[in-house]
Length: 475
Image (cartoon, rainbow, N blue to C red; front, top):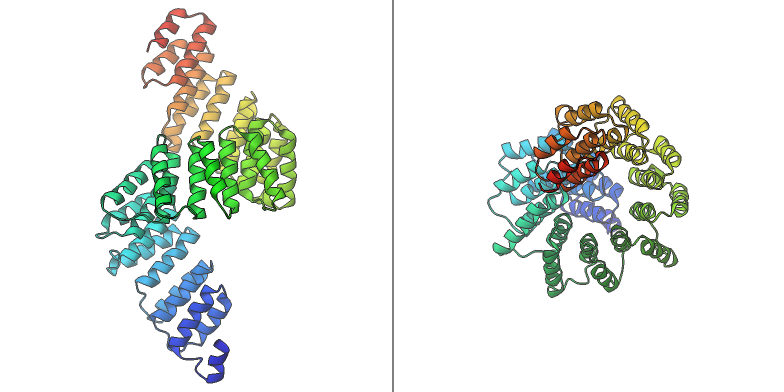
């Protein structure tokens, strides 16, 4: 068609060129879209916007932002569609700073209340990890539709606020807003993170079937994941078997369901079946398999997976490398774990934490504490899990004073609020060192934590303090 336009001499017509740019963009030919765009002499806002849309559709967020700057320089005012597309580009780049700048422009231009723009803002803030700002945008929308509501449910579910996502999902029902595939997927993700949500997950499953969406592979994959996380492996298997055209995600979801519920050998058998059926594995497949190897104690198979991931060039993937490190650590092969860490993982807090955990779990407290010091030198901030392992190392070594220092530094130096598991670790530090008075005093100042109580009870038995043990057991 383009060639006929050129031969007919109408290839510079703005209306036709705009449509060509759109067509090339949808076909994935960004170079041709750009070439046509450059021939348009009198570009209007739609010309610029459709080129920006083409850039975003083809994953070139840098080009989209450059086009917006050029658009500003030429004095063409962006409209809501332009800004929505730009926000899509920023979502992909996870550029919160520029996202806020665009938001400020929208606010000053009176576009913030536009439902399409508001939905794009919610998606952008969610992708950039700022759920508070996504909430603020959502709260200011006067009218809401299934798209904006679903975006907010997905934002909440994807950021670990599953309970809030479920409340919003139920609110949609109360307001008579019909859910779509995106809503159901987001609600199922929320069910995965909320204990006791299996009943809701089953209700959603029934609604999916009743709505004729049972053949939707995305929904089926989400159901497999939800049932797996809820320990309903038989239900997960039933959904998996019902999928006519399984995607790689389908297989990965079923693998994870087995691995998460202690069926590691079955998960490994499923991977063999994947190979026989010609299903190519990806990073997530190998991470799940390595977790299964860690639980099943199959170190030799773990080494074979290591060889495969290395041959496929996947060791540069932080998730794969950390899973491999964790597998070696849990199976007691600390030398191999450290080799993976030194070669592939030195820039990841999760990997540092996994290596510290490996040392702590095997009584190598000196190495664990030395590695923690190395984190600070590298400018990496520890997280909540890091401190669980550091406190465990202090407990093993009987380092009471240093344990208290680490415990105090959580809130004072790192802004991390200690949780039940951290208090339990400190009770264990004190109990193992024979400081039962201090351990009991700490325990009495807190809500009842079973782990901490058991730790102190064990210490009472070890030190022959039966009276204290009776008091603790009757708290």
